[in-house]
Length: 518
Ligand code: TNX
Image (tube, rainbow, N blue to C red; front, side, top):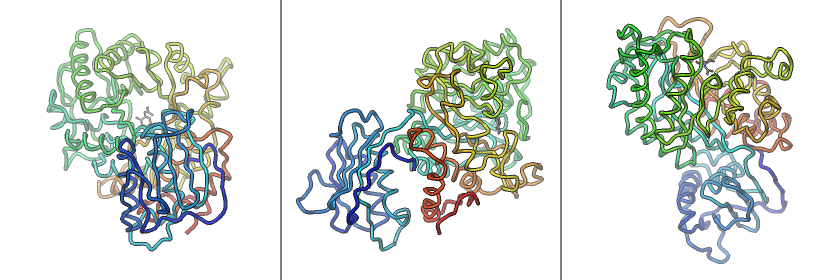
């Protein structure tokens, strides 16, 4: 999972990894080979030495950058035949994706330690490459803070499904989680709250933690996209920096549960202060994040004029570009000026937007998409009624919201990122897909507000439940060709996949839609 572009089962006896297996890799393949060796050693207990060339007759796992042309940046071939496994790709990134396929061809025990094996791979020939270049997972750490170690655990799991972007939603009304030297109050005051909490903080990442997460993601060929949301969702900033408020007085930090509760003061007189804040915080985020993108937010802004909103999008876009980044914004930013090379993230409701496309009743989301696309922007597809991991699966699953409807596994899987928006967005303008996990209601009984923080589970419990099994559904939409996908097939593969999560201690949702293998 995700289903590869082409799989040919070769039959015959399986290829076994044994105590004699060596991993063959040259210098260019070494980083990926080392990562793979570490995983295989942990599981099998075999030495799995790295060697520059194969010893005749010894079983090998070979990694090579000598690959057939046409695989693209992330494509690869995987061949398991005659006691040899061979992974070939054009880039280290492609090789890494191949290693993730290899892990899934090994038995589920590869996800654990101290099991006896046997460690077999069926004889097979796979040719694979992604449908879209952007396959993201978003995590909101503003409402509920997620410690760096848990963020890394999630990134490691996401890499299993060939996710290549981690969108880090770092600022919210309820908290500012980016380290800041320019505005230390963002960490002292802005990080002192979460949704439902005002005691026990501050909750933010240190520079060292942030860099560690970026490096951990990079080792898995995952790009971190930081988001600094504005001009709404900014109460934590407005509690820390007085000049962002029209009256020049800092607000009380916000620890409630509502959305649309704040907006920077966008009066002419205050714009320089807002611009200064955006310039400095974007520079800090950009300096910590080597990837090409910066997400400027732009969603759910209460009570500003269109001119004021456009002015904010303009200054935020310029700040991103000045720091060498391309802009991503929630689809609302279509109403503002977008720099060349931007992308907008569509988070509408397919069940309302799709049927109205091309009719007189076209929805606001589609109108905004049209404006964005006309400016040359690409589109990241994250419909709330399909891809939002914070929606409940069914009325009686414990966590989550339901404003976009219930999102059981089949609903998360059974749609297509191009078909839902054509012809407003042409296939070539779809950059990819993303599954966002918001944390507004990361406690059981989410329709009621909690009266104590004691009811909140550890963030990993919430994450595991909401992300698995729906992330693999969205990941497959992003990776696999449309013709390789079907719900009965996905459902069967998911059922067989459950033991891998069990082996790793992932508390996935055992949805009754799936006949889980034990
Ligand atoms: C809408 S989606 C939001 C978030 C909430 C989410 C809850 C979007 C761009 N904004 O602020 O957390 O709904 O589902």
